[in-house]
Length: 458
Image 1 (cartoon, rainbow, N blue to C red):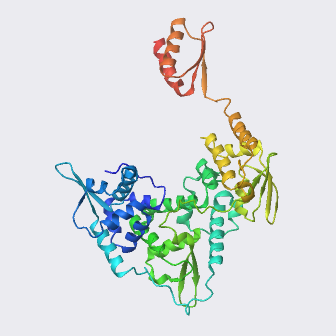
Image 2: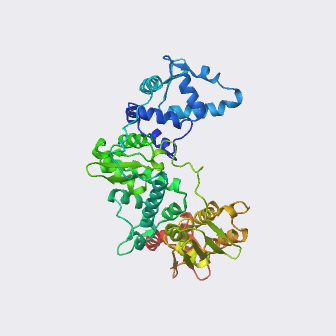
Image 3: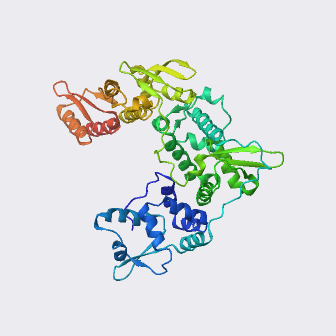
């Protein structure tokens, strides 16, 4: 069995976590097989191609001879990954000898793809039917605006009212775990929601896609079918138009949901309607959690705690407002200050379970989004600022508030000492005064303490 535990940190981890029956069904689609091959580590790709035309099992010892001694760790990772994705089927015989062979359906489809070449999932619409298709630059701008308007629904209800309506299914997934809903109160950010907003765009998008796939069964959509369609999208050409009539009802609803995220743009002609994939959709099979192509930074923090953000984005302004005081906003510049009051407001806004983690998240956000002129320096954020943020966080933890009860007027010294022993035994003892026979216990054992004292009186 594989030695690496599957944790869904990217798209292919989500594929690997599918039940074996659904994963086998995915390999009926040649596009899925090619997408899986693309995602594999280099050594794993080499093993697949070496065994592509081998019809008999290959022993583990034979495969170990394919690599040098210092490459065994990479060999183990490659084999584990292939087993997790069921590209390799592992067999142990009576002599406890391990053998591997390629998944038969995966092997046949990949052989056909190499011999006959790949065919696109669907052909783009002719230019004579579609008119006024956006340029790649306009498409990137559209995707960016769609994603910003989507996030504004989480940060500010007043800003969300200015944006277009988001589908109920996508909004439900988006808010799950990120907002806390209390009776007669406006929704508030949870700690997870706060940290979500400080993530980079790729990590945020992967979170949403992961939740969208995980909760697909609630919408009556098979997760394997959804993954299959999302991987098919990665084979479409960015900027080309594809007829909506070629999609099933489930696929059509999925495209409409993805358009809310900026993964596709919908257009309507006189007779036909079509969708245009953006770069976010065509890169799905690589990895949504890949942060190698990080967005350009825009924040400058000075030693006097002044903050300058060179941005025209309302989303950036709202994110900075979560932990800083925004003083004024120009067309391309946001000016503010990092203050203790605003940081405390962030901690109190439903973000109280792990303040140290939130502090690290804020500092990491400022470092990752540092303006290019500042990013060249070390440290990117002045040390006195990061140290002071940590000190402000530690100020909140100087006193630990615990619900407690004071018990006095014990009938005798023996009952008082027995009560003290009872409180210590159940880890509820806080303080005692043996001369005046007074005892303070934690609130969570007070009910048990009353029952104990009642039994002592009897």
